[in-house]
Structure formats: C-alpha cells, structure tokens
Image (cartoon, rainbow over all chains, first blue to last red; front, side, top):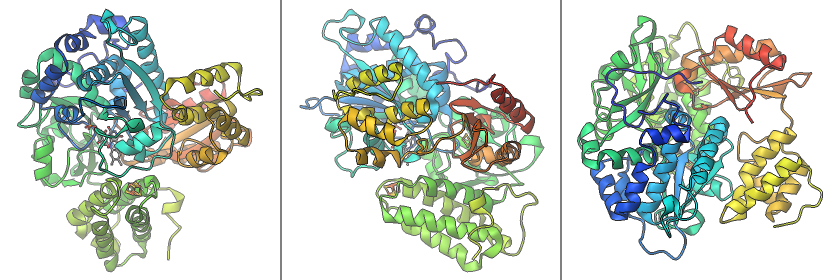
Length: 441
Length: 169
Ligand SMILES: Cc1cc2nc3c(=O)[nH]c(=O)nc-3n(C[C@H](O)[C@H](O)[C@H](O)COP(=O)(O)O)c2cc1C
Ligand code: SF4
Ligand code: FES
C-alpha cells in the first residue's frame, strides 16, 4: 500500500479525504460527498461551467488546458450522444498521483464525472484505468456499484425525474500512448491505440463519433471540490491564471518521496528541500525533471521557480503531470538520457515515421554512446535527430521523446563530452541486456 | 449477441462476458477487457481464446490479433503462475530498481520474459507502473509491492512460493 505523506505547507483540497476511508460510500457522504453534484443538478449547466471557468482549473493531464473552457466547447445540440471520458491511464514516468485518488477517494472521480456530464449534457461517462491498476479498478467498480445502489447513478438520479447518468469502467492493457486522448478513444472502442487526426477535436467528434469531454482523473476529481468551495475562492489558492492546488509526486533522490498537495505556483526548490525533506543522504542535487519524464530537465541553479504552467514554461520546461523527479550528483546524465529514451522508443506506437524511426535511432545512438563507442559527432547527431522530430509527428509523443533529449544535451553537453573522455560514474545503474553489450558497432 | 455454444471459459467468466458486451454503445469496446480477463483465467491469450472472443464480438480473428499485438500486458505464451514485473524506469532506477531486477534474476535463476522450470514464476523488466513515489516498485501479477529492498523481495517471493502471497484478481 502506498504510504501517505504530509507536510504543513500542503493545502488539502483534493486530498482532504485521503486516509479517511472515503472509498466507503457512507464515509464519503459524511465528508460532503455527492453534495456538489446535487448543487449542479439544482443550478444547471451554465452555473457549473461558470464556476469551473472562475476556478482557473487547468487540466492536470499534462497540457494545462483550462477545464471550464474545454467543457464550454461542447456543442449544446448534438445528434449523437455526448460522453465524458476520464483519463486514468497514468503512464508518464514519475507520475503516480491518480493512483492515490483512485485508492483513497474513488467517489470524487465518480462525482466529478457526473458533474462534467451535467455541464455538457452527457448521460454517460467512462472511467478508463490503465491495465496495471487492477486493484484500483476493483475499488472504483465497487464505488460505482454502491453509487448505483443508492440511486445516485442510473435513471432519475437523486430522485430527479428525467436526470439520468451512467458510468462504465474500462481497463487498458499496457500502452503509454493510450494516454493520448484520441488514442484512448480508439482503445476504448476496442482498437489499437493509434491516435486520430485532429481536427476534428474530441469536443466535436470523440468517442463513438459523439462530442466528448476528456479529462485527466485529477482534473475530474477537482470539480466537486470547486463547486463546494466556489470557483473564485478555489482560484485564489493558486497563482495567477493557475487556479487551486495540484497533487505533486516527488520521487527519486529525496528524503521523503510522496504525493503532496501544494498550491499552484509553490516554489519548486522549497518543494524539494522542505516538503520532500531535501536530497537523500545529504548529497548534492544535480538536476530535476519537473513534470514527468517528457519535461526538459532543470539544473540545480534553476530551481527557484513557481510550480505552475506559465512559470515552468518561462523556465524553458513544463509542469506536465506534476511528477517531480530529483537526481543527485551521482547520476550520469548520459545514462539517465538513455533510460528515458528507451521508454519512448518502447512506447512509440509506430504509426508515423519521425517518431518510430527517430526514437529508435536516438536509442541506438545513445546506447552506442553509453557503451563507450561514441564520438563527438554523435552529440550533434542526437540533437539533430531530436530537433527533426519536434513538431513533425502525428501526436505529441514524438515531442515528448525529443524535448527531454534536447534538454539533456543542452544543459549537460559538457558531461556528454567528458563521457567520451572516459569520465563515468563509479556505479552504472542500467543492466538491461539490450542496452549494454549489444549495439557495440 | 453471437451464440457461443461451447465456451472455453468458466461459467463465471462466460457470464461476465455476456454482460460486458451489453455495457457499451458498441460491442467491440469489450475487446481489451475481455482479452485481459481471459488471459487471467487461461494464463495467456491462446488461439482458442482469440477464436471465442472473435466469435463473441462478431470480429475477424485478425481484428483480435491486431489489437492483441499492440498491448504489452497481453501475451500469447504462458507466463509463470506469478509474473514478477520489476520497474526500472527513472524513479525506480534512481532508487535501486536495477538492483531489485538483478536480485530477482539471481534468485529465480531466469532472465527477462523467462519462466522458471516449475512454472511458478516468470520475470519481466517493465516500464513505469505508477508507483514512482514508492520506488523501487514491482508488481506480482496485479499486486503492487513498494519500497523494495533485496531482503523484502526475498520475503515476498518466498511468500508466493509458499502460497501465502497476495493475489488480486
Ligand atoms: C503520449 C501521451 C500520453 C498521455 N498520457 C496521459 C495520461 O496518462 N493521463 C492523462 O490524463 N493525460 C495524458 N495525456 C494527455 C491527454 O492527451 C489529454 O490532454 C488529457 O487527458 C486531457 O485532460 P486534462 O485537460 O484534464 O489535462 C497524454 C498525452 C500524450 C501525448
Ligand atoms: S508520434 Fe507518431 S508514432 Fe509516435 S506515438 Fe504518436 S502517432 Fe505513434
Ligand atoms: S518509475 Fe517505477 S513506478 Fe514509475
């Protein structure tokens, strides 16, 4: 069972029921559960969307798109049924926040799905969890069944004539790419997780061809809290144009790794040194991957920055999925870059050439380099490959592979150069056979 | 619904599948969960599984195989009774994920995607499993084990070997 952590600087909104047994519907009800959705039924779709807009909530899946605005894009009239799709695929390395929500507060995801449904006029929602999260799927399925038993789901919910809402849970079977919104829809329709061309965007043509709102599980779980406390008060907790709080997963070389709820805009350095207890074993910090493995790395002297979408963007990186990975001085950036690209090469769906070939060549080149058979031209070549993937792939996975690679080379070029001269860490970490020994020539 | 007269699945699973196909606006949506649940019962996605699922969903076997080959959790060969999946992605790597993987290799005497001769265990190096803050982490079948050390791994594997391990279905 994942350990729960706590720090005085946390502002517990979305995590306020964690550890309180709220997977049980009675406990959830005791802790203000299912009040927000009844308010939404009472006050109507427009009120919900206005509160969501006022909250300044931006998508927690990675891109940070304003949620209220996303919901307002869904056409009012539609011949085809509309859907809400909850993205619980959570596969970005460094990210385990939705894990804790499903575990401790599954009803907040259900209630949020209903609220999104009311806002856009959908009568059906899907909650998609990655296949590895079977024990969490079981928890969510029990919560859904309990909500049906109470009459909160199904026909005439909460006794309101003509208000219907159904939720179906769904499981993936191992594929990072399926987290991409249109690939997720393909997967839910029983197909390979190959993304769709955009436009049309999901808000217009999504699941089964109907208008669809797709949101990350944390985004959805935030909705009930926002309606309960009011959009504006929620917004005020965060920073400018970045409303509220979010769950940050701090992992790697820190003393107290864990998932912490911090206000948007909270200082990254403080998050590492105070909230997570500083670098493990009192060693020196070398670098931080701030928002999951696709975000460009920050160096130790670049950490005085606020954790929100805009400030991280200005710092040349991204807030991403909120997974902060801390590296101490012992880590080889060449090794870390190779392990990062191994992942993207493995997960490329193979649909478009720049990503399929690009990730493969990046992995091959980095593998050779890592094994001591590189030369100076390889560094430029890695950069060239990554630059030529940027913006040229069918979906953003290509960028997700190229961006961190460019970051490693840009920020730690001298380390790549020194690596050629034999400066290696004392203790290499990788032992994957295909990455060591093979590809020597 | 396509009638399946001679199901290869247990009555419980067959009943579950009968229901599953009715949940979605389009029957085919049940495909991935069905493949996974069938694999849980049969041990892998056998030809017979492909055949029956295709029949249940009115799909060509080729459609099923196409999807099957995409998802990394689906396999067409048996794994061990307990499939040990060790994460070596970044957060785990930084906290000893490779040490855990190598420890498992030594203890079980098998490599990546291999099965022990008694068919009790198989081993896989996997990508991030969403337990980064509790690294290093692994899954045995669907169960998570976190904050691992080699000694903890010994205990966990011994428990499974003795039939005392947790096993989520
Ligand atoms: C390769 C790739 C993987 C993604 N994986 C996830 C994921 O696991 N979970 C998630 O919520 N969003 C993921 N996204 C982002 C989704 O496409 C989408 O933007 C998000 O679910 C929208 O929800 P939000 O507005 O609430 O953030 C991924 C995107 C890409 C390109
Ligand atoms: S960028 Fe292209 S190959 Fe890569 S995952 Fe997206 S569609 Fe597939
Ligand atoms: S990196 Fe190992 S669980 Fe995420």
